Length: 498
Image (tube, rainbow, N blue to C red; front, side, top):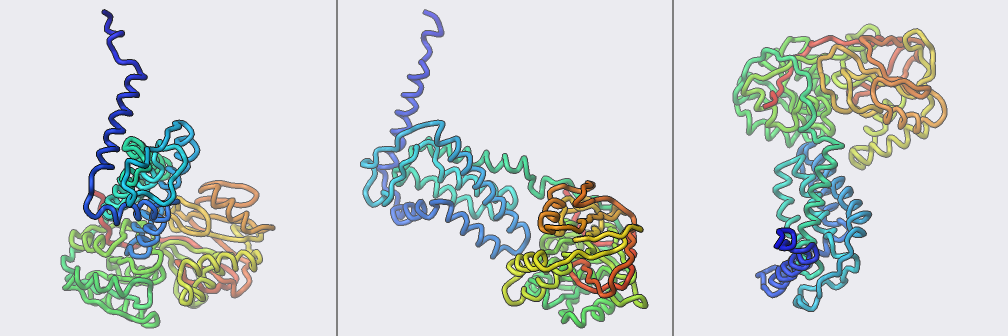
């Protein structure tokens, strides 16, 4: 007898698999799980159309204390969307499988509305696994919270009698695959290469000894962060100041301590950077604002990240952007920026956002400000590098940003000695032109926009009083501006990659 004839046929394998699948389904149907009757059917209904996961993402974004929480929520939803698209366009149509016989399941477990689509694979299990995996890829902590809920949703589909166990396992596998496929296209922050960080000498300050921290008590979450700083660094001195008193507090702190600490948003950190560079002391940044671009580009997302760097004495050198004349006018000092300097649409957006954010919140105010800026703005006219032209936007970044457009993105090198210059030329439809600049990427040229690297930028022929923005602050220009940078002028405490 040949070996081939003794092997089971594909049809026999399929029948045996379905027999085991049905037996597993029946065991679940016959078994009583204490407390499950009150929980799993409700959980299954709550996950319809992804509502449970959208609510979970909103809660994570609201309750999370760092950008990692918001990234985890966003990646979870994006992974869910990829899994749902794959299931609904390919998965359900590829395998036509009847739903289980509902009579085998006790009535109290059954859903009021029975699904009618193909049983294989389980869309609920795919969505649950995709969301949980996407969240875990960005934040292991939130992933540990979400995973048991996702597992319960997947189990509920068998418990309520709408899927066979193999449907759920296949759906979960597709969901996990969707999350990893998305990561292959859009890397997580942990996958991105570490920023260029020239190491610097800085004193180790365990428990915050000889550190003075200035807290902007009206900046974002700075007050809550200040409490964490006091607990983690009991030997540090903490000064909570009103915005009008920040300059004096920072100057005093830089004179008294071995390092200057600052807790606030990008505008507050900007002021502290100028003071630290002037006094030649290292800067310790504690994220306490709404966006915290500079801190996040350093890899600092929580108070503990800075505490770790202070304890070890880990620090790096970074470039400091500079513009002349500064906010005080021709007779004043230089102005500085850690993130970006801009003219055109963006300063108007910042001004409107700051007006509305105390009343309606930061993100809604940002959306409203963008709509107002695009609707009411006119292109400014300036002489840029010796050529006069109308401009919707001039963006000058301190180092090359990986994402373009008016909003800053991640920088891989904070000490490259270069300015990232993005220009959106004047003309009709500013919204489309700004969008085209955002999509095109860095180091590009077109009739609509240009993106180049420079060591300095000269502007002339400005209308006096033209608003400009630097690190989220707004001031007004004279007729000329010179923008350059001071290479490696600032030492900042920064956790080193493992």
